[in-house]
View 1: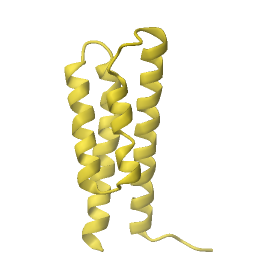
View 2 (view 1 turned 90 degrees about the horizontal axis):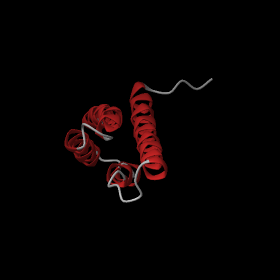
View 3 (view 1 turned 45 degrees about the vertical axis):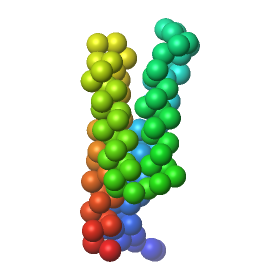
Length: 104
């Protein structure tokens, strides 16, 4: 039985957090688009959350987390609060990725 290393486990958790944040953002965007307004800018965090999937650098993940959190603050009294969770997921993923890269 193969037991993955701790570094591999952190990398996997970081990747799963990015995917979960992306999925959450898409779900929020779809809900807004279909129920509230077709001209909403809620697609911006959903589109930005795809960047760490293709460029898994800690700095990219942290930048997208900041963008998502900024969107959550700006749109805080309407749909923005739903983007706090993916922002936190992305911050944790960025920190895990940074720790993995730092040790290798």
